[in-house]
Length: 578
Image (cartoon, rainbow, N blue to C red; front, side):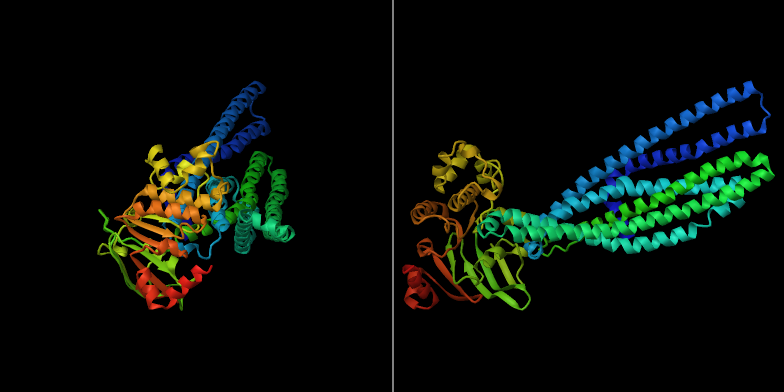
């Protein structure tokens, strides 16, 4: 019920269309219930023998025309019901997919730690599509069938209460079977949806890692893994369908019992009173109509269970807690100077395993600060906290005197340009990728930024230049080319804070030197945070922060740190002999 209320509230924009569909459903039901009454009236005229042949022919024509009009009205109502429910359903699904995506953008990086891309995509695409079945098919079918059941029951009791009571003897058994079926089948459909998500996740992983599969000759292993997952999905669905088949057959058999009773007992009553023949004919027609909705419950129930299983998975994302939250009226940063302070900051991804421990660092406006230390000491985590992808477990981080938790995320990230180690490029042109942080940038500005990042040289050699599509995740570019595109993107963005996380790790030494010389101008009068392993990249930094085991071990310039010895001097010696 809670899930139904959520769906009803979420679809409020389409209540008008659903209301029109509901009116059409009423019209369909009325037309379907009226047709047997016309047949009853005609049968009564024939059986009674009171009307003359000419009168009977005229009345038959009149009733035939009425019946034709009723069936036409029923067809029109069926069209309206079908179109408007599908219109509302598919537009609602489109809105729902957009809402889920918007929620995914709001969720912090913590949400994605234990999630597979394919699983999330399955919820956005497959599970929402099942909700379309709920709105366009299951719910309208339930309303139609409920209206028919109520309407026919009233008419049956009005015609002959004894026959009506006898024809309904199977109803308690049908209700019990339906309740048991719903309880049994929902977990199985839920399992089927989860396995389908796993199949999507495996396919996404394998397609992304196709190079590794081919390089390591793991074709058979990965095919077997996909085969097992695909088979598991088929088995789960077939378990549910086996129950559905048993349920449908039981419903059909129990529904037939009512018809058998009416034919047997009704025939006996007609022999005793021929005047009842018209009532019994109409009764049998109504009874067929009455049990159609009952037999349809098997399919409707199956659709309902599938849709509920999908809706549950959808709302798991929509209701997911956003751990990096904005204040109700956050501060909007303007004219950022770049004064950054980490005050006794600690952070962990997993409880009890601190990545950063009591970090206290000040970065003054316009300073170039480098972070260095062994792998896994928290350098990238430092950057992630600065971007507020996560919040500290303890301590505070301030920018120009404002706690980052009090600042709007939009204005915070608007003040930064990032070049991250794992470069991501969209399947678009080079120009679009470089201009991603500044969509309004002119082609001339894009080219100027590319020259500064030493990307213009290789772009100029491409047949389509800046209009070249880079492929998914930049597949058509080398690692060094992608990194230069990423640097160009950050240069073009032109923000007061520049973050370089292993920005030149994938380029050769000569290209790195050229980029470093060009970046000297970019970093001037701009707060810059650098993570790098090559000493040539950080030697000129105003301040070098040495991290070790999640703590600040030392701070100073290159010369000061070398003179003091310690970890930095050791890393310098290793770097020189590498």
